[in-house]
Length: 106
Image 1 (spheres, rainbow, N blue to C red):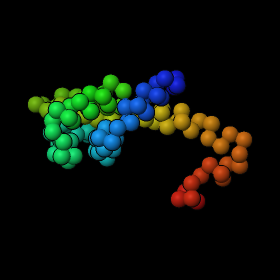
Image 2: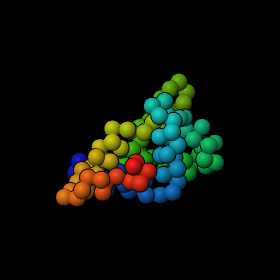
Image 3: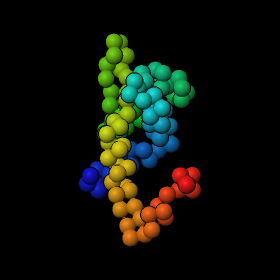
Image 4: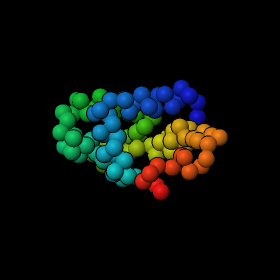
């Protein structure tokens, strides 16, 4: 992954509302959620949600698909896995491997 791509993805998440939307979509998994359901869950006015979904789509974090009369939004999990791999590819380079694990993982 190029550094600029990582910056774009991270910038897409750099707003509290977008991060909330994204996390809700992560919980929904591959099924995704229609915009109306997202708006209800997060108590957001449709224009506000629309703006943030557009930003997430532009960043490459979310995709939209028509399902009947609804537009369903889903996380681009491949992009997220690639971003996490990029961020951690040199984790603990030169250090004892146990240094890299969190307390919860031990």
